[in-house]
Image 1 (tube, rainbow, N blue to C red):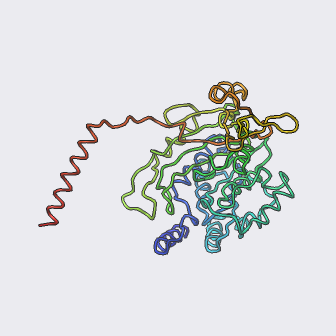
Image 2: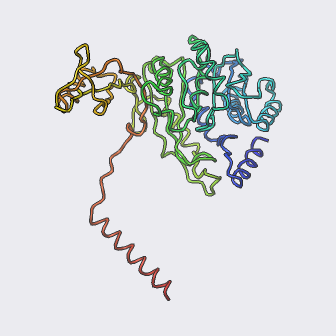
Image 3: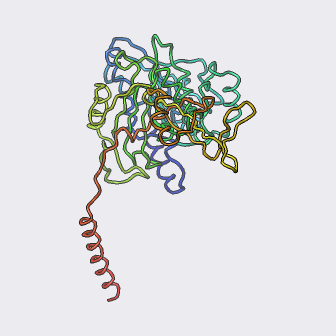
Amino acid sequence: MGYIFEELIRRFSELSNETAGEHFTPREVIRLMVNLLFVNDREILTKQGIVRTLYDPASGTGGMLSIAEEYLREFNPDARLEVFGQEVNPESYAICKSDMLIKGQNASNIKFGNSFTNDGLENEKFDYMLSNPPFGVEWKKVEKQVKDEHEKRGFAGRFGAGLPRISDGSFLFLQHMISKMKPANGGSRIGIVFNGSPLFTGGAGSGESEIRKWIVENDMLEAIIAMPEQLFYNTGIFTYIWIVTNRKARARKGKIQLINAIGFYNKMSRSLGNKRNEIGEGHIETITKTYGDFKENEFSKIFDNEDFGYWQITVERPLKDESGSIMKDSKGKLKPDADLRDSERVPLKEDIKTYFKREVLPHVPDAWIDESKTKKGYEINFTKYFYKYKPLRSLAEIRADILALEKETDGLLRKAIE
């Protein structure tokens, strides 16, 4: 039923330009996410009579829940994965619930409604969580309830770390899921799909940066996998799978792994909406092994948590009057010139004063730091870490291409005239 519904949604959304991707995720992407979530737990999951729970706060037609259950059964037919979900779209919710009934799951575990304003599983905690929330969707309709919870409950609620800008609720989903982690001694693992925005949007002190800071400084971000473009039905953009957990293996503590898998795909013989690429079983195995091995190579880089943090410092320069004299306030302190004010990012691993002396003072000897404005920020500039320099083409190559195009154009014009 899920497959049929998804195909209908895809076809009708192509005709009406609606977003099919709000309804479902390509099955091979789910398979990869399930692999990444379970790969380090295979020993536990193969024990007889094991029972684990899995939750998706934007469950759609239940694809993630179903594939996770199938995957676990492959490893251990005696194991049981109890699945839970919530879905705001009534048609998707009905199909998800029906699918769970057919598969012998407890259909009452699937809740209807908005996860932010009406959490149907408010007091539940889960072993595993998977989700592909809608990309870049604003949360204005639930703004009042979310802000109230953030301001009144803080970290006792779900959104204590901060609120993202109103145009993108991605980080609300992740914070919601983190709130449903089991205590650290047993712990939980989360796999979630984002676009590029949560990696770097927002400067130091912004809601997004504060959320990244909270996740990284609490050592919850385990890995991020960059996926190929044109993989989803409703968008051609690059996507990223975040693995978040409160039970990192000893070797991973204080570390974050970045995996560049943007080249791991096959071209589809026929496009499905914006989906022109797919990842095959071989790609899934390679990405999973790269993640599980936790070693650096061409596609895998390992960093300390602090490598993604920085101090944003405000650099001031003195204000001069019309005669060129430096101006001071009533306490004798130099007055800053707002027009000359600048900012610098200092890596967390560097001493601010040493950096300032080396990078700023040689160019502007009269500058100083306004320490009251110093902020700590976090961002993950994924592209920077896997950038490969490509030498520019020679002038001879460019000239040859231009001449070839001129000949081709000339031929076309002659045909048109004839």
